[in-house]
Amino acid sequence: MNAITDETTAPATALDRMRQRAVSDYLAVSRGAGVFSSMDDYLAAEERAWDRLQAAIGRARRVEESALV
Image 1 (cartoon, rainbow, N blue to C red):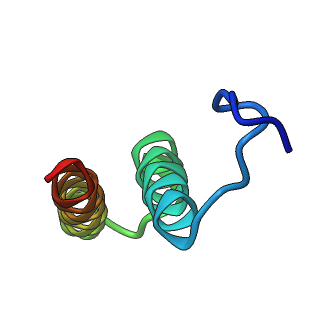
Image 2: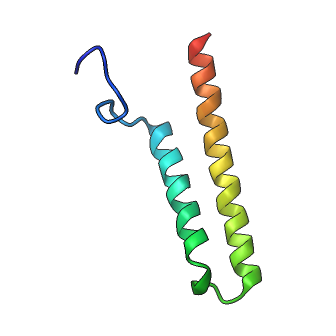
């Protein structure tokens, strides 16, 4: 691997994979409103997926900030 990398060549870390999974899960829920038995079920699932996405982004941000110290 070269000393200079970009997002397409750098290997994904566990944190990157977790963030990508959270994005994917949120988008799947958001786009799949029709598969839920009720609007309440859909809204609850979307809220959980959004919370997981925000938590993953927050963890990644904290790790990135701690690496800069």
